[in-house]
Image 1 (cartoon, rainbow, N blue to C red):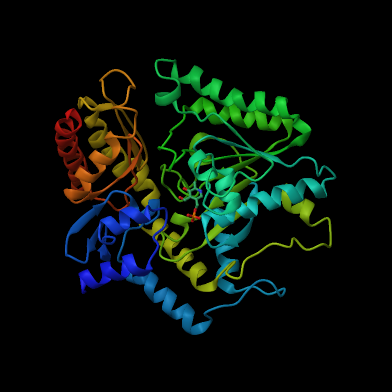
Image 2 (cartoon, rainbow, N blue to C red):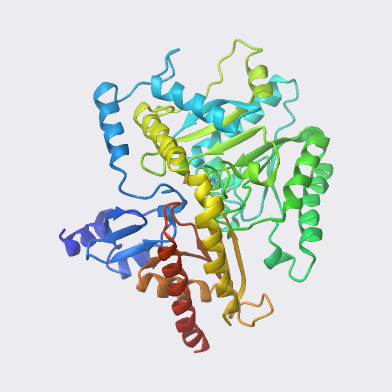
Amino acid sequence: YNVSELRRLDVAHHLPAQSSYRLQQQMGGSRIITRAEGSTVWDAEGNAILDGMAGLWCVDIGYGRAELADVAREQMLELPYYNSFFRTATAPAVELAAKLASLHGGALQHIFFNTSGSESNDTVLRLVRYYWALKGQPERSIIISRHNAYHGSTVAGASLGGMSFMHVQGGLPIPGIEHIMQPYHFGDGFGEDPEEFALRAADALEERILAIGADKVAAFIGEPVQGAGGVIIPHRAYWQRIEAICRKYGVLIVSDEVICGFGRLGRWFGYQHFGFTPDIVSMAKGLSSGYLPISATAVSHEIVETLRATDDDFVHGYTYSGHPVAAAVALRNIEIMEREALVDRVADDAGPHFAEAIGALADHPLVGEVRTLGLIGAIELVAEKGTNRRHGKGGAAGPVVRDACIARGLMVRAIRDTIVMCPPFVITHEEIDRMAAIIRAALDEAVGTLAH
Ligand code: PLP
């Protein structure tokens, strides 16, 4: 690779996602990633980087799976594309729908395909409002979400999301979406009994439903564990209470499993870990381990029965809904997960080792809390041990530690002063230990940097 030329072209022509274009220019272009294997990626300069983020929370089975390339090639040669608009379908799409239905078991037996997590949540928004209209309750249209939730970057996705810094760009949220507190114990309930705090956070839903009027609330949407909001792992009591409140008022439950789905928490789906039953589930990322863009929306039988009570079309869908090549790759990705028992590996082997190795960082003077569940985790950086007080105005420590990790060959993400991790399911014990050692060295270095 001609690295300097690629970086020049990057600045001249490429606008990266969720980026400061001033910073991109000041840096003289992005780091060009050229290849990957297992849990490691390499840049064009030949630097190896241990991928503590599984790409963007998605490369669950790890990089370099030639089998997926073979499947994609075969499917492209046989049938590269066809749609489901013309009373048509393709074999991979139908087979993948059946496979996903079997993974959900029980109530969620119907699958709608999209290409991204954002699009899946757009589907959710239109579907729940259409459902209530068909039920003769069109005024039941408000969707309740949570602060700092991330549900995507499209207009509906970013509106459902609860990130105010996204809302200010583009005049969001669109009408009919409300946000309640998130179950962020370290940030918002520090010192409070964790279970009491979780119930207080869940009861905020009931308060909001009553304030709006239950006959106007269509659905509640939440990630079982908020990912981009800072890896917020709620106390078990939280989702139980949320479910009870939704059932009490007839509000649909939407579980956004874009990160949590496909084993991240040690069960196939996050709702199975927390023991609640959603009416709709959004899936993406791990569905294909990021090898091709595909997402899916699982829908309950009750909702589909309502859709079947009319001859009208649900006038919604994308050119690439059920794309046969992406569907074939997703099917094989799930087959690999099953063959290699990767979900069990998260629950019983890599996950516990991750919890121990990363958990040991809790003794560091900069660390206020370490949270892990399965193969997702967060480290809270504080100015004073034993408190949740941040350096300066907050947001200063995270980037320092993140950059020190990246300089040492580990990719992690900083969400303000929370370092988040989400490694591939194939990460070895040695690699987990290396992650922990690099983070500790980065923390040690940051102590000096932050003191100045
Ligand atoms: N929902 C959740 C929980 C996510 O984490 C993401 C992406 O990070 C999305 C939705 C949006 O998915 P996509 O980026 O594929 O549109």
